[in-house]
Amino acid sequence: MRVLLISGNQELSGVMTPLPLGLACVAAATEKAGYEVRFLDLLSTPDWKTAIRNAIASLSPEVIGLSVRNIDDQTMGNTRFLLAPLKDIVALCRGLCSAPIVIGGAGFSIFPESTLAYLGADMGIQGEGEVAFPRLLSWLENGRQGPAPAGVYLAEHPHAYVPQAISTDLDALPLPAPDAWLNSAMSPEWRIPVQTRRGCPQDCSFCSTGMIEGRHLRVRSVESVTEWLTSYRRRGFREFYFVDNTFNIPLAYAKELCRGIIEARLEIDWWAQIYPKSADTELADLMARAGCTLVGLGFESGSEPVLRLLNKKFKPAEVAEISTIFRAAGMKRNGFLMLGAPGETRQTVEESLAFARSLHLDALKISAGIRIYPHTPLAVRAVAEGIIRADDDLLLPRFYMAPAVRDWLPERIARYNSL
Image 1 (cartoon, rainbow, N blue to C red):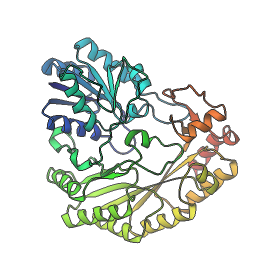
Image 2: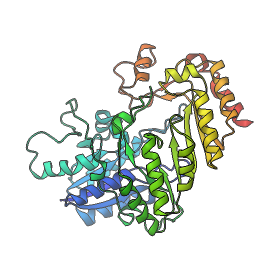
Image 3: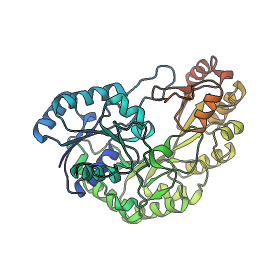
Image 4: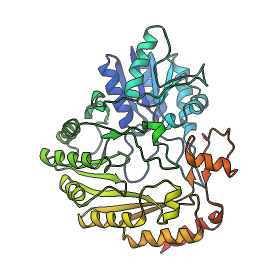
């Protein structure tokens, strides 16, 4: 069976190019299962229509997979809805061939039913595509006998219960080789995404990670990660960023991984996200020795009552201590404030801004308002407060903003940023 996999993201964000690691992993698993795969990354393709036409003409795919990275840019105010361009991609594929179109990716996993309906595709996969997509292809080859595999949504059964596709053994899922998905014109200075674990048990009140990866935390073996990094190092890449939601959880695994990178003598430069709890001097020193030069601290607020309402399991004092530890280890520190949360007042905003200033961070990103995702405690609260309807599928972006700061907060952030 011939398969065309398209990474539909065409949005550049931040200082790093968002390379399609997830779809590349699906491609590797699909090839391992014996299928012929063509990988098309539209981010590096200026004329995406011609690229798709050429790919379909040369491959004559029997199935087309399209990855949905983001639904929107999560920015309250001038929000950009990112599904409309993907709808155009689906329509173009429809007009060029009769192959069924399968949607997947992080964005789809959050909004499976509504995304499938909006895009007008045939099927979708929630959860780990490396598990579900090869099984879906086999199911199609066998004439759709029996129920669809776990994780597979069908357009003709929009409200059927679908169990999430999750693997308990990440080492069983192949990682993509550099030449399988990276454009030959890519600069070796580009940062390559690395994922060593999936799932998050933290239960932050606003977070969608559980719908994407599940709550059960699973890790790859240190050996598989270092071998994969070595293959990219030999290809000329030395800059990486760990896309793990929390690099320091579990703490013992994070330390073991750093020791593996040190022993492999990779001499790489990498970044990671730190949950500001369960980190110590030993971890910071190991990360620095392994090549980490920057950590992101997602503390969201400097007010203890607001942190409790967000279900954060740390206090501002712990954030300050951990920030100092990483600063002493020689790493840059980026911080993130998410203002307007439940319980937010002018006083808690000022408390958060003063706290962030006291950390002497290398960079601070401040957002106003919180994107509401389905099946989260924040969504339940928003319904109770009349901000959203109980039947709102939330595909079109909706945001929570504490009433006490709604009209005042944007101007206050602007004044802070101008200092």
